[in-house]
Image (cartoon, rainbow, N blue to C red; front, top):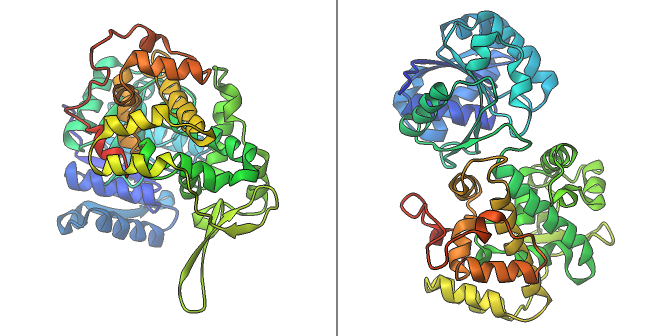
Length: 436
């Protein structure tokens, strides 16, 4: 396994940079140079790193500095340079040019990009630098979200990739998913497909409850900790747009049209309604004079915020009760047979999620286990392969796909009947990801 004693983190004051530095210092026992635009920001990053892991012993390993005064010296001493600056080529490429001048042979350089081309970013380096350049897409917050997508490009060395993967897994405690250099990689490619298509359906059903209705239909009983549109609100509508636009512009798969950003979301972005960070997006929470919280939801038809509605969808309480009783198979049996528009939509999206997850095997990842790990560890969503088993196996799942007019991926069509489809049970128990 690769030995990494000194690390430089660029962008150390952000939540991801500080959190990653905390993980590297605590689990990797490495000296970490934490660089930011100015020293106060870097010192703030040190405090955030410490608070993320709550381990006093790491303080001595966290050393603040600035890009202007310290970058070249710190890079020249480092075994790994971990770059987490803003998600654009215009910011990352000049930083890479500076790193390339000071990097010693054998030093790993990686970026936390969630979708930029790793091969393009590697071009700032010489042959040895390109061989040692990777995407290391940590998920936020790194201490709690253990997924790391290790993104390779054609210039990488397979032995080095394995060594780095072993270090990330065995030393830093990451769940490592090896992905090819494709738009949005694995987790975001699948996750944002579902979220954006749910947003499109919210517009189609704006007169029946829109955003709130879709999150009710696609709630915790469908195997996720947070509704898809609540997740968009959490990550920010601007971030959501950047990811789906990138996928829409750079892919042409069977789900291509579902990555087109709905017009109402663009309108909200233009108006600064970006989500939780802007104190209002798809939903908004206010306080009354007596301190009571009230939740509102964006009305796609009027552009106003309405009180968040309650729904009475007959099958959902029954499913939730069975999940509370740990009877997941019976819960999914109800989802499979329930009548009505809402159940049809739930089945459509469950089928779409399974289909799209498995469809990227071969292009983005080499095995279905890689995409299962990406969704389970990166999004806290029940992995697609596990859903197949909960639905009764490949045959029953294919029947739902065909009825919902969803493409059946080859890997599912070729699956052996009577054999478990999900193979990560000893690593990730999917039952814990259903919410009743």
